[in-house]
Image (cartoon, rainbow, N blue to C red; front, side, top):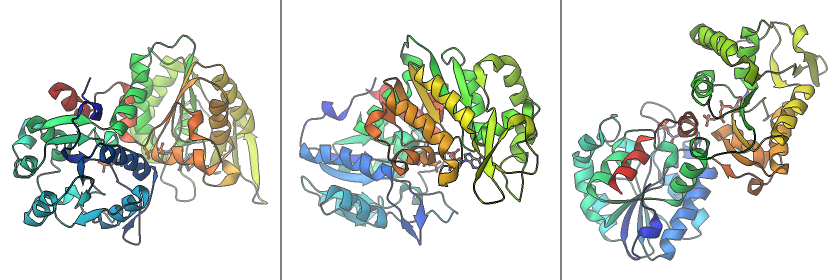
Amino acid sequence: MFDTIDDLEPGQRLLVRVDLNAPVEDGRGQDNRRFARHADSIRALLEDDHAVTVMAHQGRPGRDTFISLESHAEILADHLDRPVDFVADTYGEEALEAIDDLETGDVLVLENVRMCEDELPEKDPEEHADSEFVRTLAPHFDAYVNDAYSAAHRAHASLVGFPLVMDAYAGPVMDAEYTANSAIQDREFDGPVTMVLGGTKAEDLIPVIEQVDETVDRFCLGGIVGELFLRAAGHDVGYDVDGTEFFDHQWDDHADTIERILETYGDRLTLATDLAYEGDDGDRAEVDVEDLEKDTSYLDVGSDTADAYADLVRDSEAVFVKGALGVFEDERFADGTVEVLRAIAETDCFSVVGGGDTSRAIKMYGLDEADFSHVSIAGGAYVRALTGDTLVGVEVLEREA
Ligand SMILES: Nc1ncnc2c1ncn2[C@@H]1O[C@H](COP(=O)(O)OP(=O)(O)OP(=O)(O)O)[C@@H](O)[C@H]1O
Ligand SMILES: O=C(O)[C@H](O)COP(=O)(O)O
């Protein structure tokens, strides 16, 4: 296990890696659950009289979302209800001066760390630790805190380089996410364990089904992923319609694996028995899977399926959710996702809900986050944790502890 911020002496100068990677609109970062969670961590550090320098990334070079963190610093200031400084530099003179000027209780956000050449190549921690970026910045701090669980699957300098040359600690978000998301490997559950898999990314979820086969008793499938499995089971669904680009390429790449999984784990996979679509009058309509039509867009699981999945959830000791069962952003097609989430909230099973989009459904439909054991702010890192893969950023913290 790693050291946490409870192991830190008060009053230190800290370099704190968080994950504020956010949707971008009109060139500005948009508030999301990540800001609130990391603001809680920073508040806890300020209460212990630390001076906090925040390091984070936004987007990837070449994409529209690759922007400065200036707007992120403003959002963070709103959450913290105190001034947060921003410097448009990461380890040059300007940044070092701003860092050295920090006093107890101050918060400074450095520029998007992916704007540094040394950050991005996936490399060994040892190589990153020897980069100019890490060697220049590290001596200006007493310790390093990694709170960026949702980026911990990336072997980037800001995540794996610093722990080798500094005292390193896990932040509260890192600690909570790691404990909850690894529960599937570490915890012994007495009763049935159910995994609800949906959303759009079949290629991410296929390895999950294969690798947690020892621990999970049943999988409830929906969303695009569920439709691809229905196609493999011989139903007329899972084809791109009206220019969508969800199905055909995933089918071309993964049909053999999906068919094999269906054959191997068939008795544990629950597929939809009915689906919902937009009827001629614009309302939600439903159809039995035996009567599906290839050229219809199906946008949710049907009510019989939602009821059956909710019953399975109520009978579970633990439930892990990744991906939505339908297009819940449209109220007409939210029933499957919301009925399952409501069933989880009403029972006292151990529950983790993950995926950036999927977890938004909780707030959108008036459910209380406190009724879930854990709501993850991670996407890719959550999936990896479910499959039992180690996260390199966590591994380095553990090794150096
Ligand atoms: N039948 C469907 N047709 C089209 N979109 C669907 C369908 N079912 C679910 N979705 C979409 O799936 C999305 C959620 O799944 P997605 O795989 O994008 O991510 P996620 O689980 O939120 O996580 P991540 O953080 O990895 O992106 C929702 O926005 C929902 O609209
Ligand atoms: O948003 C995320 O999932 C993390 O911040 C990682 O971002 P990345 O996929 O661009 O590395």
